[in-house]
Figure 1: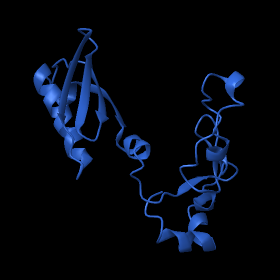
Figure 2: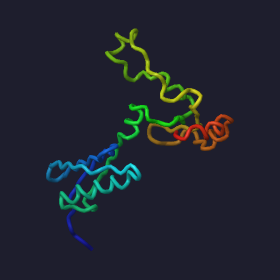
Figure 3: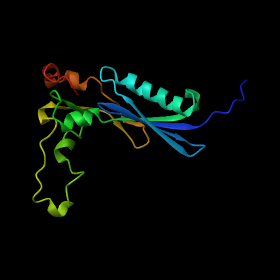
Figure 4: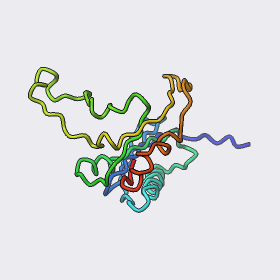
Length: 167
């Protein structure tokens, strides 16, 4: 049985369109190490793994020293902001099909200026929004069973699938 002591390193990764940014926090030393590696659009997992390998090499650490990994990406956000998306569908829980239309989370300058604010166009047209049954509570317990087949059963679901490559 090995009695080797492992370091405690947390890693955060942001996969972007050009670079994959990596931040490692050594919990014991209290130090932060950052690095970049080229992103790999053909297989983003390669850029992710290359980033982890690179930061661990800088730290002289191994995978056994890693206690947590957090990953985020700006690739989809950038495509959305640059209007480079194929037609997009949206699948959500039944009862939440208008969440994109309501879009109240961020009104510029608060609600005092909302009279002049023009809500941007929906990123997904209402006719490309599909709902599924099912519900989880705040603790992750199933309240209503998830219905995986609901979108496929709807007449619109099968008709839209060919013209909407992304959901």
